Length: 139
Image 1 (tube, rainbow, N blue to C red):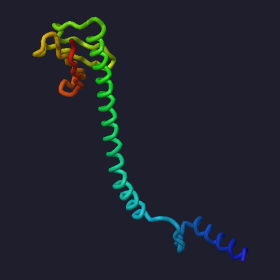
Image 2: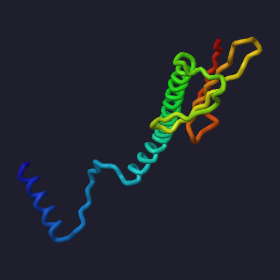
Image 3: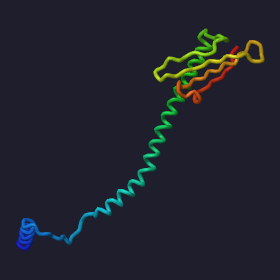
Image 4: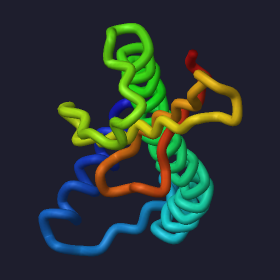
């Protein structure tokens, strides 16, 4: 049995050396068409996953900006109220930061004597329409 296998192998090797075509009856692999169809199905399945990843990255950046703006607005509000900087006539200023944010402080009189409405608005320099606004009353 071993000799017959060796003889068949020698005959096959001789045919290969002679340049003759050999047909293999035992097909153990995939055809090119099967591989292309599998890749197509895989591509269709990956498109929603990649889209979800891109959307989540955008949501992360937006929430990071909102958190930074909120913390900055709270700090500005506390400085305005408690650090002896309460000036009813100060209207706008700039915030020096590594992300290039700006803020405005608006102080207006209410209908009651001695009570002021303080508004702090923090925004990115390039996106004026999106930002964080805090309001409070001060005596």
